[in-house]
Length: 171
Image (cartoon, rainbow, N blue to C red; front, side, top):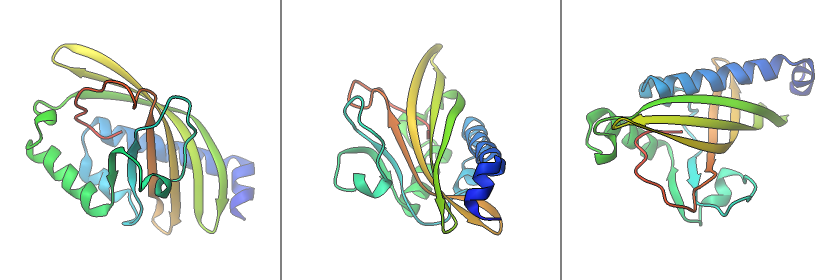
């Protein structure tokens, strides 16, 4: 069965949706070691600062831009270590979060890579107040013998060019 056949049959969409929902659950539970294990060891985790309405681009397109973060494998591990150790002012105390991932669109699958877009709403509860963030996300997933892995993840916050307070979690 080819990747495109799997997408057309709906099997790949169900597999991708389950993967994204599991990732959101890991992040809500702050299971950062499990989240790091979702990555294939390459690629980037990017939160670009983009003008309103700008379309998502591949992760590499943001390398020379201003970003809230542009993390390779080492920086992802370092960021998680700071969260886990409580050394980040923005993570003390850590926010409680609930994520909803929806509008999953598989753009293409080729050579074991799945390119997709999704929407995420994140509710943060910290210091007795709740805030809502919305983001367009772009992923490149790699199909491996162990299952899907993240190669690239781009999180474009809708208000990334506006006033943001400290964000004490990963999207």
